[in-house]
Length: 172
Image (cartoon, rainbow, N blue to C red; front, top):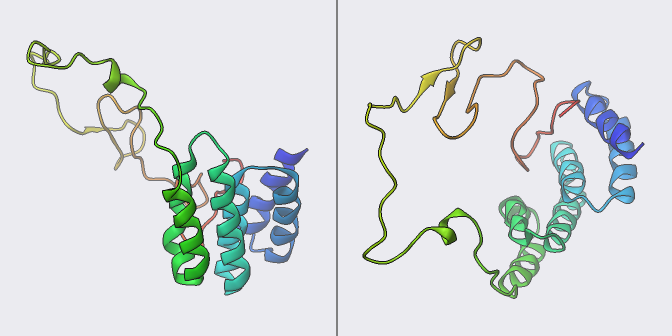
């Protein structure tokens, strides 16, 4: 039910029914701990020049990120929050600085180190850095990074976070 409300909020936003979008986003924010919900409502407030409310929602999004397993994602709201409410941005920045360093994990930690470590094998044939993406005309794929970038039609799923005035398209 919550997912449907979130999709309905995004749809209302894209249909420019901002009053309905705000109402639906408020319900979503109250019903979940997802930081993105608060951030999207902040974007909507920002677009409507409701800057105090936008700052509150961006700060809330940052607070929610701090409670996740990736607390440094709170940095995505700092730029906009700093222009809206430097005090709230400073408070969030202080909370980020107080975090304990997390142990590194991932492929790089499993790599052998030292003078005897071998570099990964290079391909024998030259590899194009970018290759045309079939069916998209102007799009590109980067080897090893999945499908890469492809131009999207207006209203297609939005891939970024917290760019003022933007929100994901319905169905994202």
